[in-house]
Image (tube, rainbow, N blue to C red; front, side):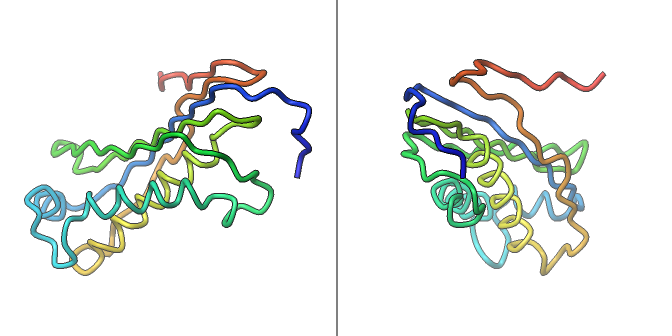
Length: 147
């Protein structure tokens, strides 16, 4: 684990995203709230937030951070038959929250898979990535859009 004791606490934020490719019928059932396990997006939102808070328990060299905010949002795209999950995590601390945002997005995506697998085992989680981060020594960074 890197020693961050000499670093100053700053406001830090990170945004991560993952996309799930699903069958059109699966997307329609999620949108309509018709899955047997219940409210897919509500449960996935809660799982993502919990995952952000538990990241140091999962990733061995992550520092425990005082998370000041965590949000998980969803975009359902009928044309692409996809669910895009975006996780935004904030802290005032000595190191960034990129891993917390990535973990939140990934676990929210895995939760969606778990809740829909009875009707669609072919779901694919794709393009898990950091979208943006701010704060700290390196400042602000944004992923370039695909050409």
